[in-house]
Each structure stands twice: as C-alpha cells, then as structure tokens.
Amino acid sequence: MNTEALTEKTLAAMFDHTQLAPDATEEMMKKLCDEAREIGTAMVAINPYWVPFCKEQLKGTDVHVGAAIGFPLGQNTLATKLFETRDSLEEGADEIDYMINQSKVKAGDWDYIEKEMREITEISHEFNAPCKVIFENCNLTKDEIRKIAEIAKKVCIDYVKTSTGKGKGGATVEDVKLMKDTVGDTCKVKAAGGIRDWETCRAMIEAGAERIGTSASLKILEEFRRSREQ
Image (cartoon, rainbow, N blue to C red):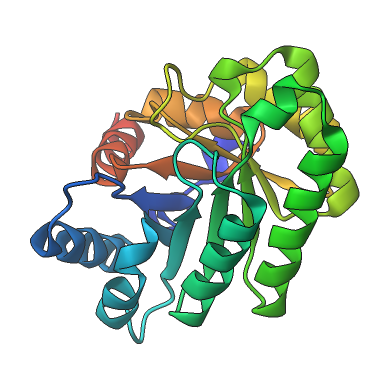
C-alpha cells in the first residue's frame, strides 16, 4: 500500500489498539477504550475477561472489541479454544485473534492445523466476526510460515497475523511480505509485535499489512503527524 495516501484518520483505522498485560486494571482498560474511541481505531485487542467491560465502554462507537484466544502460547486443547472463541463472541467480542498450536506445526501435523483453523473460523463467522490466526513467526522457519499461510488461504480465514507481541521477536518486513505473497487477496495480513514508531509501522504497511497491532497507537499517530508537517 502507498502510505502517501494515508491520513491520520485512515491510519488510525488500521490499528488494533492493544492492552494484553496480565495485571491490567480497570483504569488501564478504560484508558485503552477512551484512546481507541478518541482516535478511531479498528479495534481494541484484549484478553477475553475484559470483553464485557470494553464492549460497554465502546457502546455507540465503530471500534470493535477483539478477544485473544489461546493467548499467548496456543497450547490449549482445540476444545478449549473453541469454547473460548464462542464464549468471547457471546460476551460481545466483534473479532477473534487466536494463537496457533506451534507444537503441531513443529510435528508437521498440518491436518490438525487446518482443523483448528477451520473450526475457530467457522465459529467466528457464525457471529459475522473476522478471525485472525497468529503464527508467532519468531519460532518458525520460512517454510513453516509459508505452509501455515497456504492453509489459511485454503480455509479463507480473514487475517494471518505475525506475532503475539509476547514472543522473542515481533513482526518483520520480510515475514509480512512472505505471508502476503502466499495468501494473496484471499486473506489480509496483520503485523504485530514491536511496532512502536511510524517508521516501522510504515514499513509494515508498505510490505502488505492492512492491520497493525500496537500499544503505541498515539505515539505512532503523533510521529505520522509530524512527518506530514515537515
């Protein structure tokens, strides 16, 4: 995407404004929602416990509430992930981001990866909710990233996502390009993990990302604003 065409409003609408700290307080979550409402982000990315609270805070706005499923390790059973997905949606979540089972990736059990992805996507789509699969690319080979992306294309999940932001590494331009080249126009790409400034954000968008997961939305927008004033 040509970032020259972006405005503050269209850039903010690409952000999944994120607060996934295990010790997040009600005050912190209210601040997250207030900021998301003020700048007009696509979504707030939160742990499932906070879905009803954030849904109430964002009532009457276009900001979605996104639940992180199997987060951050992805090592839950499939039954647990399916329950967590449906429960979050019934509690008011508008979007789902789920962490893949990387043990199954390393085992080359691609049938399991497809089944997990398909069933979580199907539940999400019952509620007309976009679904994103998190790869956690820092733990994967390029061949593994490509294979998961091929499965995502087959399943027609809405987004492939680089990282949880909790791993040993975050999004890279190289991985965003690889994921986008593999899924084509069938899926969108969400870049997340370590995106804390406009320069990095711009690089991810130009590489093919259409959503940006970040806790630094306000900082990035301020840097974007300054860049346009120069």
